[in-house]
Length: 464
Figure 1 (tube, one colour):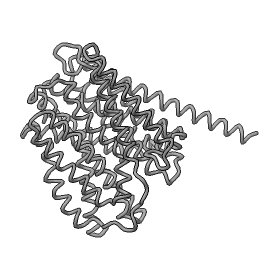
Figure 2 (cartoon, helix red, strand yellow):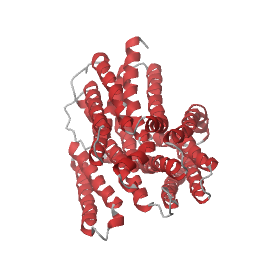
Figure 3 (cartoon, helix red, strand yellow):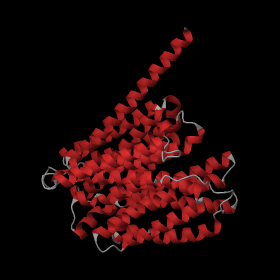
Figure 4 (cartoon, rainbow, N blue to C red):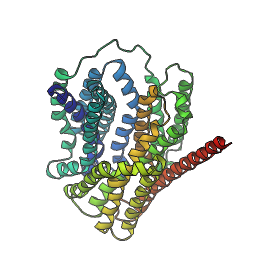
C-alpha cells in the first residue's frame, strides 16, 4: 500500500471503530447515568435500544445513499452527525436530551458504516490487497466492540460518564478534516434510482411502537389504550411496509431474497444473536457493578481478556472449524457456547456470584460463542444469493442483528425485571436470553436437517 492508501484505510477504519465502540462503551456507565438522572433500570436501557434500532433500521438506506449520493459525502455527513450527537449526549442536561442524542448517534452510524466500507473497497481494487485492507478494517471494528466495556469503565471511574460520548468529538473532528483532503472524489455518474426512504421510516416507526408496547406492558392496567394503540400501530405500519416491498419497482429490500431458506434462517438467527449479545453486555455491567460491587474500571478490565480470546479464536480456530463443519453446524456450536455461558451466569445468581462462574460465562459468550456465531451466520447470509444482491444481503444481516438487539433488550426489560430483593440482575433476565439461544439453536438445527434431506434427495435422484 502507498502512503495515501494507508491514510484512507486508517480514516475509514477510525469511522467504523467509533461506531462499534459506542455500542459497548455505554454499558459500564449505566449505573452512573441512573444515579445522576434518578431513573429506573427499564428506562436507562432505552439509551441502547434507540441506538441499535436506528442504526439497524437505516443501515440499508445508508448503503444505498452511499452509492447514490457519494461515498465521501455520506462519510462526512454521517461522521458530522455522529460528532454533533456525541457532543449533545456528552453535555446533556437531562435524560430526554441524552436519549434524543443517542438516537441521532444511531442514525449517524447507519450513514457512516456503509460509506466507510465502500471507500475501502473502492480504494483497494487488487484482490489480495483488498482482502488485506478489509481484514484491517474489520479488526478496527472488532477492537472497538471488544474494548468498549473496558474503555467505558475506565472513563466512567476516573473522569465521568459524559466523556464516554465527548471522547468521540476530537477523534471524529480530526478524522473528518483529513477525510475532506484525502478521500477520493466520486467518479462516474451517480445512480439515479429512486431511494425507498419511506420504507425505512415505516420500519423504524413500526419497531419503535412495538418496542414501546413491549417495554410498557408491565403498566398495561394503567395505560391499556396507549399500549394497545402501540401494537395496532405496529401492525398497520408493518403491513404498509410489506405492501411497499411487494409493489415498488426498487424497494428497500428485494422480496425475492426471502425465497432463499439459508438467508431467511441466518437473518432470524442474527436477530437472536443481537438480542443475546447486547442483552448480555447490558446485564453483565449491572451484575459486576451493582450485584458484585466492582468499580466500572475493574469490571471493564476483567472483560479485556475475552476480547483477546475472541481475536485468537477468529485467527487460529475458525479456519480449522470451517473446514470440519458446515456453516449451520458451526452456527449450532456457537449457539451452544452462548447457551452454556448464559447457564453459567444463571447459576452464579443462585450461588452468590462466584467470580470464576461469572467470568466463565462471559468467556463462553463474548470470547467464543459470539465469534463462531458471527462467522457462520455471515456465510449463511449470502449463501446461494446472486452476486448482484450480495450488498443488500450483507446489509440485511447487519440490520437483523441490530433490530434483534433493540427489540430483544426491550423484552429483557419487560420480562426480566429483578424479582430477587437487592439484585440488579435477577434470574428471569438471564432466562430470557437463554430462551433466545434455544430459539437460535432450533433455527440452525432445522436448517441442518433441511440441508441433509435435500442432499439425500439429490443423491437418490442421481442414483435413479
